[in-house]
Image 1 (spheres, rainbow, N blue to C red):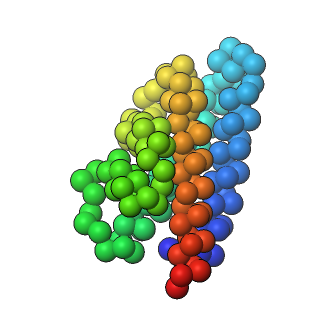
Image 2 (cartoon, rainbow, N blue to C red; image 1 turned 60 degrees about the vertical axis):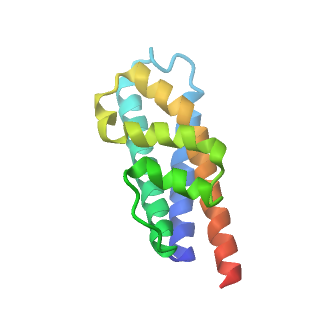
Length: 140
């Protein structure tokens, strides 16, 4: 992935992350008349953010000519071992990655719990990727 593409992706992901964070601030989120639409939107945004971070992480692994990961969560474990992302964010990112394929089956309450417990780490992962691309481009 080139830096210009990453910057555009980062801009979109940041917008989506900010939207989720604002939604989580709503009082009575689970009791509002539009809860169904709001939760579906959050699921969509979280799915999109997680999928994109997986793709970015996988592209970094390919760029570094690393062995393919056993599963999607291993991407982030490997990147933490290489100090591309911070190891303390791996649990939250893994939680979203593991939930990724079954996200549509989550109840509204489970969705809010998942989003609340992982959005900060997903944001930190994006910031780590931004730092990686910035450093990479200055060393090329």
